[in-house]
Structures are given as structure tokens and as C-alpha cells.
Length: 358
Image (cartoon, rainbow, N blue to C red):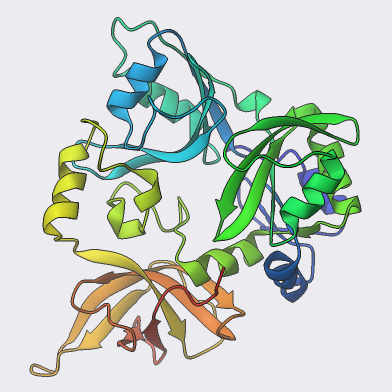
């Protein structure tokens, strides 16, 4: 699993890293309410240097990826970046990633930490006589993301130029050249910057010195839970359909055939999702373990039925309470529906998304 390139820097600055795990993501710089306030009213900087990368090049690269991936590839403009998925034949998620078109015959796939090698192997099984080269390039990838209402204004001040809104651009910040890409993070305006491994620490320090507040996983979970953004590895695994995880921006219903397309289209046409990622407020302050089951009592038989599973716990500053993201079975997804958490006395009540305005 990839380690962040900035972990040593974070530790020197007194930040908290997730103990006893790999790759030990940054949790917080010590003031979670302050980090949340900066994200929603000012600007913050997130360390994503543990992400992986895959390079796909060659004269058949566009056609090759287009016939496999769930979202647009062939008509994606050079310089544009968009979320995408590699599904299995049953329409379930194998790999989520961001796909950037770097040239007519060149693409980079920015993956979740530790997934680049497996993605290369998965894509290679579909490669036959096409003129395509697949290469893991994680060692060249060191993204850092800034987000928040003032992120664009502050970045423009650092670069001295207007920021792109739809495609990437090369910018210079404190004599460090970086690739800048507009994006969205938990419904907040955001920009991803990549100065490579050698420039990552310098870029991070420059952004912090300019006023961007360092933020970690604790605040990220709060921000994304409040708007229903699923996290790969936490909410998303190989058992989940894209629509169940609210990933409509990562697949297309207009493009031609791709792996799993028939199932995705059938779900869109006929419905039939058995579960959906929902947000529930919790009636106590203790964290809720991933995998905790949601139960409701049948009004007729009085038996307790298993109707969902919690995948993320976070604190919602918008609701001023603990919340869980959970996959809830259909017919039980109305706001106000109450569930018992596991076998204990705790209760969770479904609320309408989003609970934070963008």
C-alpha cells in the first residue's frame, strides 16, 4: 500500500496519523472544528500523495479504454479529467479512478492508494493486438488537493493567472511547476495540483504558508458524509453497483457498450436497486463500527429484520451529531425511518441528503 510522501513532514508538524495501519493516512492537525470551518468558508489542503497512477499510451489507447470503461473516454478533451470506473460483467465496481486525457494517445488513471498495479493487470487481460502500452507510474504521481469557497481565488493569486475551469494547465507556485486540474471534492470547488514527488513537500509548504489550512481524513469523512460521497475501500467494494453508491457522475448511459453496461442500463431503465447509500443521524456520540447492521422491527410479526449496514461513521458539523453512511434496503429509505444499530440500544434515523449546502 502506498505511503504518503508527506508523512514525515506531517509528523514533524505535530499532526496525527492513523495508528497501527498502512498506509497511515493523515487524520488531523489537531483542530478538527477549525479544519471543517476552513473547508466550508475558506480553503484547505488535502494530502493525496499516496494515490497510485497508471499510464495508458499508444495509437489505440483511446479506443481500448473507451470499450472497457464506464464513462466517456473517446470524446474527453485533451487536458480534461473525469471520474471513471472499470466494472465487472455483472455491473459491479472493480476499480474507481480519475481519468485524465494528457494527449490524443496518452491517458493517466489516478487510482486509490495501492490499486495501480492491480488495475494494470486487470486492463492487460483485455489487451490483445491493440497498439497500447500499460505502465504503472505511481512513482511520478504526487497529487495535493486544495478545496473550499476561496480556494480558486487564493490559487489564482499564487499563480498570477486565471484558473482553468474545465481542463488542466501548467502553473508555477514558488518556483515549483505543477499540473493543476479543476475538480469537485464533497460538493466543494477544488483543484488538484501535482508537482511530482520532488516538488510535493515544497508545494505543500507553499500552500500552507499562503493560508491553506491542512486538513485530514477526519474532516474529509465529515464533509463527504454530509453530501453522500462514497469512499472506495470504506463504502465501495466489489459487491456494489455504481448507482447504489450514488456514482452517477462516474458512468455514462449514452456511450456505447462497455463492461457491465447492460446491467447499468437495465438498472437505470427498470430500477431494481436492492440498496442505496443513505445518511443517518445517530442518537449517541460513540463511533459506529464499519459493518454494524441496521435493524427494524416488523410491525406485524414483531421480528427484527436486518435492513442495512453502516460503512462510514463521521461527525456532522451541519447536524451537530454523529452520522453514518449506510447501505439501506429499498422500501426503507424514507427520511425519518428509524433503525436499531446492531444489537445495542443505539438508534439511527435516516435524513435527506445533502445536509450541507454547497
